Image 1 (cartoon, rainbow, N blue to C red):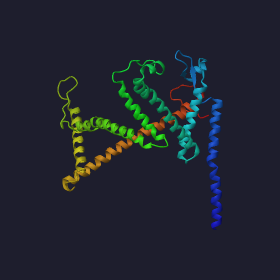
Image 2: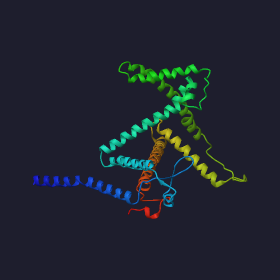
Image 3: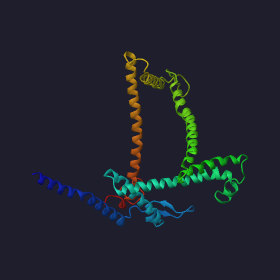
Image 4: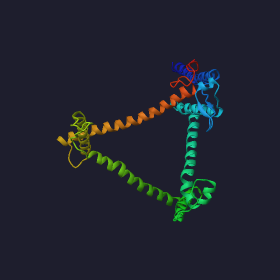
Length: 316
């Protein structure tokens, strides 16, 4: 009996092993068919003074635009990498790891180049060697040195010390500039945080409990708007006091203090839930953007902006 059940389970596992590749093959055939028949994923460009500009497929039908091989390859690469990332929803696989490595590598390389040209060249090399940088790297940079230009040797030395970690010996030298970076960044961020978050939040709670708003023409009080603003101010006052009461442990949470602390818990949970929902909403917006890219820009299954002839869009 047990051997029969084992044989059935092995047959079932063998059949299910072919479901994923079969679906993948069917999807690939469908995409290839749409690309051959309708040219889905093709990007059309038209000549312009500043260079080729992406246009809709209607210009291609009118004969004023032509396909761009480079931009079309870019769309297909972006779509395939997106699908490779989505494949993690099924299980971990080499395609996902490849797309993840490409994403991390390209991002690191891109931000390194951006930091070099927007920070290192103008703010360090341009201060130490302005004539050389203005002549070769940034022609718009002033070739004149500042009065205290020699102070910029300090960040240059700290940067070279930070690179010492790559050396086989003397990696402890990199700890000094790293400690300086962490300390300076913490100090600067602390001042900004106190001003932007801490003090502003305190100031937002110090407001009148009863609000009187005047009408737009300045004649009399707008009682409806005043009532709404007063209710909002009272809710803010009660919520802040109840939340502070929950974190006040010098008094036992019983009676009025206990009820206020429980209300503070509700206020905290509502706040955390709203913040979490806002974060999820942002992630859902990113997902919707990628799905629209796949269905609209790549496969041409939808066309909300009417950029293509009707017979080019659809599932068949």
